[in-house]
Amino acid sequence: MFNKNITLCILVIGILAFTTACASNSSESDIFSSRIDGWDCINSFDDFLYQMTEIGRNDPRYKLSDIYPPPPWEMVTELPESYLDIELSRGFGAKIEIARSYLSQTELWIRNGDQTIFRYIPSTEDIFLISPYPYDNDGTIHKDVIVKDIFEVKDGSIFGVNYPKDHETVWREAIPLISIYNELDGAFEFYDIGLRYHADDIKFGWVGMIPRDGIIIANDENAIWIYQQQDGLYNYNLQNSLLHHHEVPFTQIVQRMVISPDGNLLFSQEKEGSNWTLHPGELIQYSPIFQTITEVNVPFRRWPDYGTLLYVESGDLWLGIHGFLSSDGDWVLRNPKRRIFTDLGRGSDTYNWAHPKLLFQSSNGYLWYTAYSGDFLGVQGSAWYDPAREIGCWFTTEAGIIVEDTQQTLWMVTDGKLYKLTLSE
Image (cartoon, rainbow, N blue to C red; front, side, top):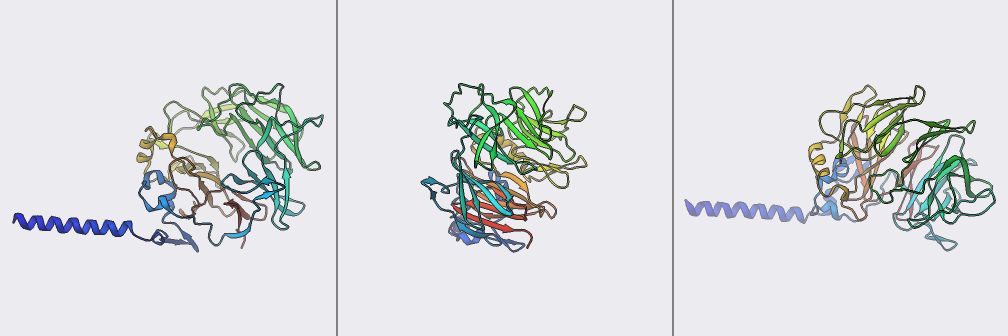
């Protein structure tokens, strides 16, 4: 009987070893196991979105070769590596910042690193370089100032935030907070709204800051909203050029700000010990009309929190990859392993995982995500999710910013190649 048990154990171990060997030697094509709405998807959407709880270092998905955006994405062109000796499109650094309609043509604003910005017109393949260094009223170009965080307002004007060129930059004079793009000159110029950039006490490199230097910009149809950590909330009226300061007594560093469909502002402020977890007092709503502040109630159970705040067309507020606060006030959890996720957030590797980032909602209702790991843990790629049907697709291992133009066409640059996806077809 003793010998039979030994034989049985050896047999079981042999079967397990054979099964493990087969699994480890499985072809990469086995990972492409789902097809959704005509898309070839890499395994499952949840594996991408919640990879920190799903994918280990020995998982074959960690070693996938490059999988470029498949149909219905269409590769339009391979962007030139350089133009007039300026590097344009190599590496992940090349990303589309805005897509606008100008002179009846779609125009893409692409940035490669901090110091290279160019306008690209897909229909003609024309390239126009834009200096990231703004000039002042006297025409003097400020090479110690870099325009970043570019955005477009309702009338088509293009603005950007003025930042120090690098960590060692020390300005000898007051610098306006923003610049505007001068269409005639093809360059940015200082746009003085009465606010200055606070060069002191800037938290360079702090991973939790969104965006990086304590300046948060949002805009609606009539105003630009600006939050600076040092002196609070302002709105600049684009119609009458008036700047107004709002008293918002936050007790912690504000990390995120977003405009709700009803015109209120929602803020997320850092709370002690809130790594990867939403805490009471973290979400604050401000009414500009009534000038009142209301704390948004959060669930008593540990609710995961990391990433973008985004209001979608339905009025729901999405918290990154985890779920949403419905327009009816109900919290809907999307993360299937929230306890594992929040436990990871309490560990020493809190800031070592590159979380997928929620970019925006396209006109067909899809939410678009991307993840770039760089020197961090995690797999790269991009994915979409349809909240109406609760299905999604991880469709590429390439990370990139995705934008939509006025013609319902999505654009994406990755590995120096320009892709488009026409939603109206």
